[in-house]
Image 1 (spheres, rainbow, N blue to C red):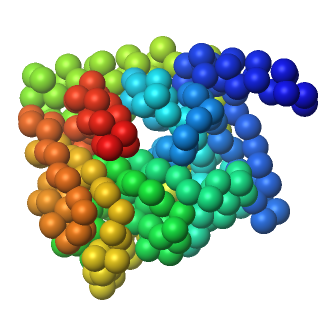
Image 2: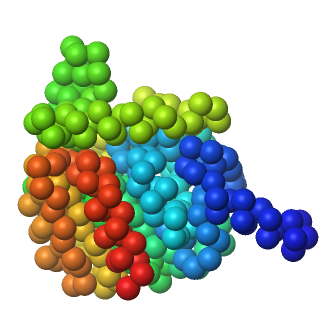
Length: 292
């Protein structure tokens, strides 16, 4: 590709929305990793690490498009997730190593990270295992390894999926949003945004093996010895809702206290998906955080 074609491609990518950006693949140690990227091709990219049982199509488009307005955003399916090859490992340490390998395979020497829920745990592993790779980090709806209550995620997920089956609805209605009038409105808006997304080139659904391995990794993380978070000296933005059923808001606050350079934001009247319910405020705060 000559310089003119490369410049045209870069300008085209900068104008695309999340629903239109193509899915790409890259070989990482013999395993194909699926990813999508959009936004201006300048500065450090923001790597998105998604939540339990999620694939690329599950990202909140208003969050991705909002941040991609000013930053290159790269979201990917980690090993064994969605359209990526291989099998999902059953520890977040291994998930972190796979994320590091993916980032390096793209040729990036330093990035910003945005991890939501399980992705926030993986982001912490990236920062601990490859500190030079991370400039700044956003940890949303997540807590520290060894935090009390994280090992109960299986029970919480099972109850939510039973409720979803009985009501013919998506379990995220119960896992992400409080069952208040405001929470229910936020859930409707969230699912409407997802529904308006891609109609072609969609990701593959999460597999049974991936579900089981991710749940095992979360349970193991909850029962592990706490990490020394003082080793993560990069600036960190910690965000959560004030009534998170999956990762107690107190765990996010505890994590922020243990990180030497962290800012904590707790969004009111919201749950695990507080950063989606308050997506406008969250995007503004992330953009300010990344710019400082």
